[in-house]
Length: 299
Image (cartoon, rainbow, N blue to C red; front, side, top):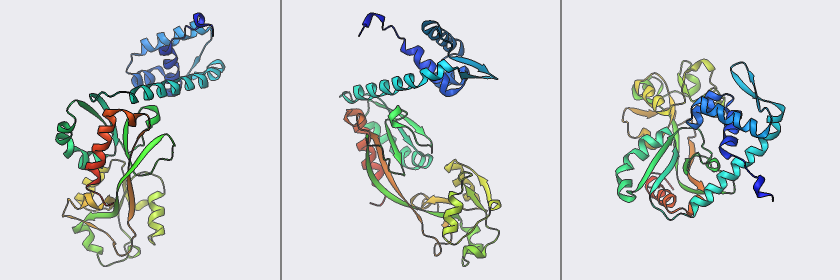
């Protein structure tokens, strides 16, 4: 290889990749924590170095030129290689200090992890935790998190998974709301109100398979935030799915139609990248979560 001619600036290449993915300098700047003018200078520098135009303005955004499209896949491969390089390097570390990022759902963060924080600081006082609280699935291969709690087992071969328990979810509502149809079958309650998680048909299909065909107008609210859903059913007037071990904390909540529904059974999986599992600080967090979270679930 002719090393003296290899003068590629990875920061400029990263800027190109993020702008291409985000569609504008402003969105890419927010993703990178960088000012728009600085990002623009990096793109201009890369174009000058390569002697090509990478973007053209379309409305308020940027679109790849033909040259940009041709180069995009190569830069994408570079980013994946850089991520893998970082994962392997971090996996060699025996340092038990620094930051570890955990991806977990709103319910898990609020009800399960928050009570453990003082215990964790005694367990690993030099580790700083970053919590990525979202119901979206993080991409561990792209370093969006170091450890994740998921309710579907990942299938990627380079991820380490450990089942730490199971839970059941029922339709829950305030007992004062449920008493109005306590002895009825779901099909006998025409004005039943539900809280949906999104606009997909997943919840409707599940209920229909249980013999309870529901209409779209019965979904009073669509809300992805599980904590908001919980507060709404505590106020009465609607039902939403909730894990039974969390609903049990609220004596005013009761499961609806228990004789007519098969509960949703969910397995909780703890996941990390195989390279990070050799990092002592990540292993400490992984083992802590496995022991502490698993103790509150069924096997």
